[in-house]
Amino acid sequence: MPLVRIPSVLRKHTGGTARMRVAGTTVREVLEGLAERHPDIRGQLLEDGRVRGYVNVYVDSEDIRYLDGLDTPVAEDGEVAIMPAVAGGVA
Image (cartoon, rainbow, N blue to C red):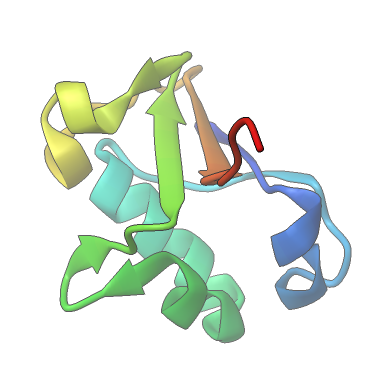
């Protein structure tokens, strides 16, 4: 099962868990599986069937926006990392 890495800002929705194995062969299936276990996280990750704009998702260090989005395949031993988008810049 793929390993899902959960950022600290979302761990309040997973009981403090930072990593967990979730079944799925695509990013969509993995995120849906995560949301089934932890329903409160769904609204933080997904909106209208898409990943929310302030959330970045990576499969094995590759940004899914440049792959197949939620339909990006995930290997059995793959890793899905959820990362909040960080705003900032030079003042």
